[in-house]
Length: 319
Image (cartoon, rainbow, N blue to C red; front, side, top):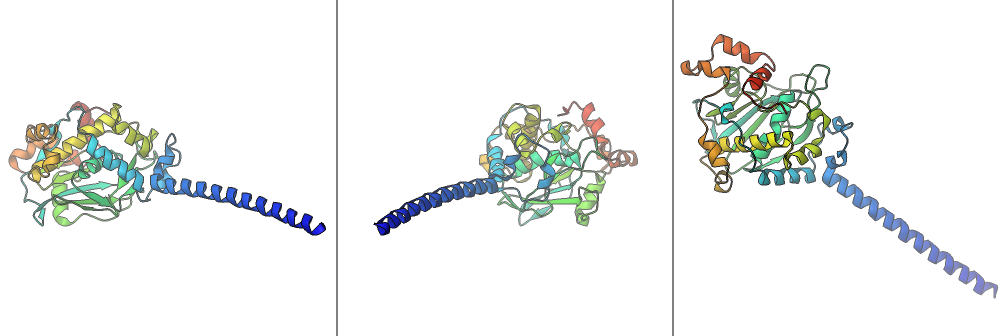
């Protein structure tokens, strides 16, 4: 009899142990799923909080968030139309590689206006191709900047592939204002011709955006997930990003021969493209007739962030 009692006791202990293993296994699976989801969505855990965004500086854009950006790029054709007068026509020697026009971005990681401009630029570029190596970045802190800690991205280690265009992004300075690298001389010549300020985008050497179309006045209050949410809504930040996603798309379509038609034929892209080449509001336009900026114009554009006053005077909303 004692042997049977001992055997029953062992059986009960075995059942309890199996139950414990089942519980541990279930908890382990749940934790693993949470970790997998966390890796996939990454920055989405920041939703509702901006306190820790600097912890993401230099981290790869998560797979989930990159997918969200791709989705936004394909679903944000609607909305108000941007002023195309910000895009300066420039008849330079065409920049072409492999038969494709070269789009050049020159900016700095500390620059809040570059930070804002990268959002519509990236969304527009995702309509034509794909990035690898894109990383999170935050513009400089409030010590030296009126507009600060703007959630953005950096092209420092990014590469881009497209069957239609070539994109080359240059981050000249880091978040601490230190020099990373100067752009190649052929790009620097045109950049300096337009004042050498940030941000600067050259579209195949046919059109130039020599300033930011957006002022990130309140963007430091938000994280990447929240700004992405604004893009699909009617908030002022989201509307501004959508406007210039379409505007940049239209300029790219203009220089690449309207390819692909699935992008360039979709409204409002044809309408925006038809408005290119009109009168420009930038002070640089005063010297375009002679083909070279005057000394006063170069001085004006070389002063960091004097574009703010120009943007205010030309009725571009501060967002």
